[in-house]
Length: 136
Length: 202
Image (cartoon, rainbow over all chains, first blue to last red):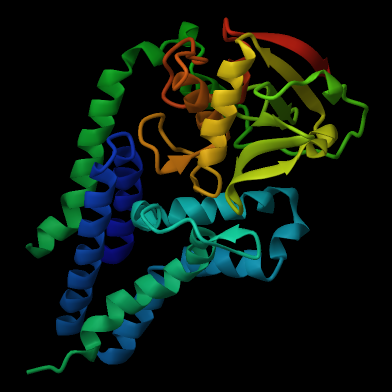
């Protein structure tokens, strides 16, 4: 629940910080640090399995939206046209960092488009990464 | 950073930024402002939530009237943020520069606008060399990142109207009459700098 709350409030904060160019980048960098520290916090209190479950569950909306788009589930209803917008909004806390990347394209799609789909697994991995550090 | 600080930092910063943004844009909160926020909230209350959608309604649109630097608007009946959902900058050669999540700022075929149930062609009333510079500015941003809620400031995140507004603002032509937070496609049609060449669906 902590990670989900942090993520939802970061969507608001980083989204509004776009109004003040550069502040969005600073907040996005802080977000990365905060999530990593949350992983450390969880590691002290939870077992490996629980931590892995939390790492996936707090990014579940990102996984579901990305999966729905990749599996073309979005074509079943007109409303699902919005899935790609919802995925981009879900990824808002890290988007300012994507905007710093070169505007490379592959198959006519920009690099950031592919990163939208990788964000959920990468954030899960970031959250889980303290588990890779040896416990004292 | 303490456990409590991590939990609350983005909520508090978000609240502070919300107050700052609202304070700097109080003029947009009234019903008479015509702002995109007011329009969206009003339409959202009636169940319209986004870009709208509908069945393609093919029809001959007189695209031949366009000249490079003109603006093309397309829309569906249930768009939440105004009459039109999308905008493109005409480049010439039956191509427009527009913004999509999946392609970023990209060059697309003008003919895609034929399917919209609402179409509007706008002439920007500026000298041809000014319009050519606006087109060149927009083309220079091709492949940059699309974000639907990109505010007007900054040059890393774009949406379909911001690139058009900025391309002309750089030439000294402000297409945003009410100094809005975001520019709805419909508001481009209300600029003193443009005239309507054609409308479909009315």
